[in-house]
Amino acid sequence: MSFAENLKYLREYNELTQKELAKKSGLSPQCICSLEQGTRSPTGTTLIALVKALDTTSDYLLGLEDDFGTRTVAPMGDSLSAEERKLVEDYRQLSPALKEMLQATIETWSNSTANKHMKKGSI
Image (cartoon, rainbow, N blue to C red):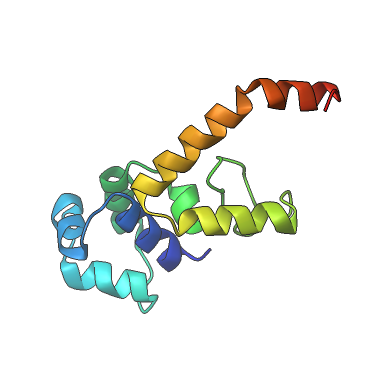
């Protein structure tokens, strides 16, 4: 994803409006809007303010690492299969509440007896 897409994604993930992010980062609402629309590129100072406000890394915002902290040449890198990339993209579209539900479901499945048998090839 691009810087603009990553910024918007993180702002929404943190349930912030553009105005709230502007206040939290010390930037103007117009600056946040322009950055998200991709009509403005961040300066070093702007990038630092956003990294601190969103508790992320500059590499993630710039698209140099993915959600899992894996360094990439391009957003999402080539290390993910098309199926994995689609899952990550779909996950990013979920609300924070749905993400929590999905994570809880995955943990339940991972710890289930059936899953342990499938890993051993019993089922």
